[in-house]
Image 1 (cartoon, rainbow, N blue to C red):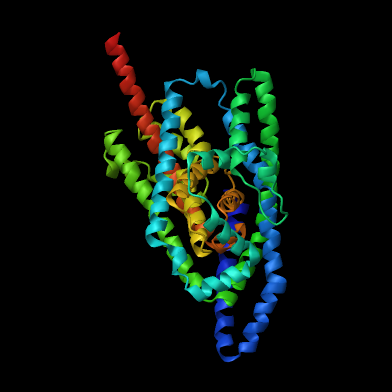
Image 2 (spheres, rainbow, N blue to C red):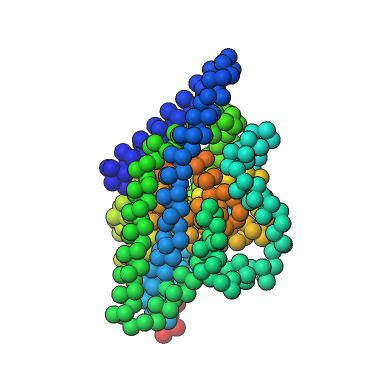
Length: 442
């Protein structure tokens, strides 16, 4: 993360604190002077809420093109799929397993803690009223949805009218992102069958679109230091202090899930698949974890990862040189875990219950969308908004967690970078074992 981005993140965090403090003071004054509280609630509705909506809707603008360009480009850049050798397939299989396990841990944690249910019924009703008819429509849509089946899954991912599905027929509702994800993957896969010159042109066009959408996200984030305190202040003065308890339970649960994946799942991988001592290993890669935590950027941690892989872990250069750069853009287990937690938490907060089948679909979508996340602070926000809309949850709900995103960003980036280097270690052991076996056979 650049110095400017670090400054922006700090401003957002301090703005969150200021917004919470101002809301608490307002609630305190309201205990003695109810008219003051009513006046500030009216000001929040007429002034602060529109400011927050400008920020949120700027993010919503880029959901469709960003998902399409990022996923299609990511698949197209793989080149000829039939030319990928054992190194690549082992790497991709471990990436997928890593991210699926991470999302599973996050969803399990949210189901156990159920942070969204810590909001008392009265506060939840106020929150639902605050977001108007869209919330009630979302709840009714979730309740009326038929049970999960193969036919329902096919219809969800492959509707008859592709463009009608993701464009939507209501200017106030985000379209369905699921068909767009399938279409983007198909475009990318078809692109791998083109000759190199045309594939590079396709990828250049997709990358250009992706860069443009990322720049728009950057514009939106410049509003964040003003929109974040406005949104959190508005929610607290209207709903009450219960929102803070709910949010704190979410942060603790999400942080615990991230730590469990990094030091639990990855320790098992090290012990069983790489035959290494987890305790000694994590001491060796400590510079990687510290760099990732302090910069909140997997790309910024990549040089340290390569140096540690070479000097401390003694990994084969061919393995670390392939797995680590690829992992910095694709192996986003911490991000996938975070996205799953946010969607389930916000759904719980708004009273939209997601069943087992829907949570399984959420696991898959969190993995796919995490790969498409732009490598900038807040890059996951548009994609999370798309996931919320997919499951009938008001996308505006991301405003509840926006203020704590900086803290969790540092943690999930640490998990991303740590998982990358553990994966590289496992792949290195497997490739050396396979090479030794081939030599003995010969």
